[in-house]
Length: 257
Image (cartoon, rainbow, N blue to C red):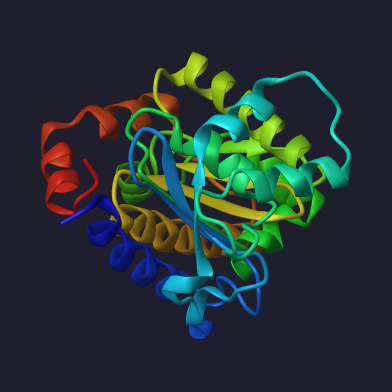
């Protein structure tokens, strides 16, 4: 069995779950997913396809190398150049055009321990990211309750609004590098102002679990705002939860480590 034979059904299942209309995580052509195939390539959703009905022929295998070269360059790219890059990175000819957000998927899948990425436009989360007060609270990089720490990590990574494509991919990578420098670990959750949410995981099931918990967390934060000032966990309490052996055991049982 090749890597693609093993990974393809997992990526399709994840995409369908993220695109389930009842969850209000992504509708129509919103969102995208990806999965690492190996050192040189990964699968990513094609532009214009829908997560809830995604089929195998709507996933495109693309090469890391040209995408990472563009991502790490300092050149200013035009829309036409970006379009040409997305066509040139395809491993096979005659396939659909990959999503314009393929570039940030390349950067995130290059991080240690990341094999699957799920990007959604979750209604509850965007309610916060599209409000001044909600965005201010998200940028405090705090957690609300223990299970959020267990599933989603010690803090969120927050990215200000940037034009989708290469500019957004570069800004995401910059913020992720800052996060790693501060916390010593790759973030599991990335929040994009006025845009949406990204979950990073070692497996498709981990990305789904992170997305579920992030949705719950957003609902709780919205409720806390309605009741009064949100009461975030202290840094000491977050660190304690993150270091507890019993929580590590639970993470492994849930497929999170």
